[in-house]
Image (tube, rainbow, N blue to C red; front, side, top):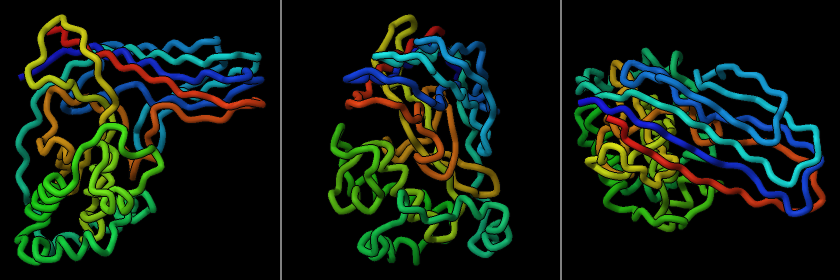
Length: 279
């Protein structure tokens, strides 16, 4: 099964007293991968900035831009058309004894940063599951399933700065928290795992031509002889409804918009995502 989707992602800031200048990075252009192809992508920024594009260390397309004129609002609109398809079922081929051989190559995806470091209580709860898992892949799916059952998805329950340990303590979170929780327990088991961000069409069976309100989404991939994806928020493997934008160690490597600005007042972030299945 394949889909063609158009994503319109609008974000930016309203500055209470205006900004004298701002310096930003946008990670809002989808990747072309073996499972998706970007047919077209456009980034519109207002006020008109000086900008340049590059790929970061993790392979994500980044637009870096600067606005040197005074402005009260900064608006970034990313419009992309992406062809997606089913992700083939991948064999779970790696044994526990195989992991040490790849830990140098994937050492960055074993880092227990403050974003993902699991709480001791969570590791204790997972001890029996880990001990009985015959393979890393079996443990990855079992641990993700445990977290899906134990942590409630509650929109707006956490903030962008919430850590995996915080989310476990409160037993609720959003997609970013589910991804960080899963990454932490896999890395603690010495399974290389990485953060993936992008979009998910909210309908299991999207209607062609119907524009739908969406939002940014996050899931994970772990190393099992090749990278295997899993969406721990929804307990499903990524498929045609998932659109990949960025990959990295955690959210800190892949925020859609990040920057600094000069102002004497506060600022307010705004975000809107619209997803339309075209065919």
